[in-house]
Length: 100
Image (tube, rainbow, N blue to C red; front, side, top):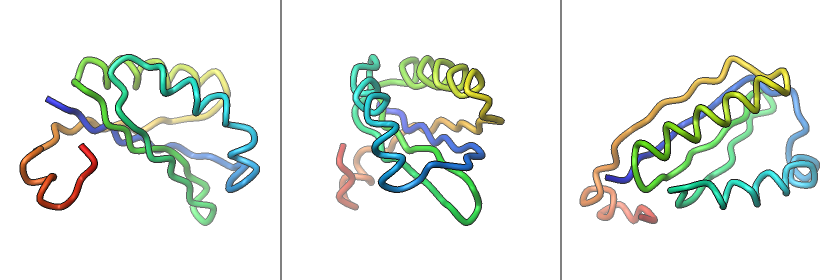
């Protein structure tokens, strides 16, 4: 069953175009993660937070990625990382045009 991973963490920047410039290689590498279908990058300058919403093929892939990404962020001095996993209800999501 497809699994949605929601991640957020405190983040001072960069945001916007500067974030794109600095994080392009990371974004490209995420495409190679086992089971990853897509990611939506999130940012909020007002609350100094960033993160993402990911769709994985299965829970095991999502959990493995959350562990890897949390360790990477910790190495960069970023934390705490909030991660939540959700099973995707495909039939209802399809009614609402979810890109599954």
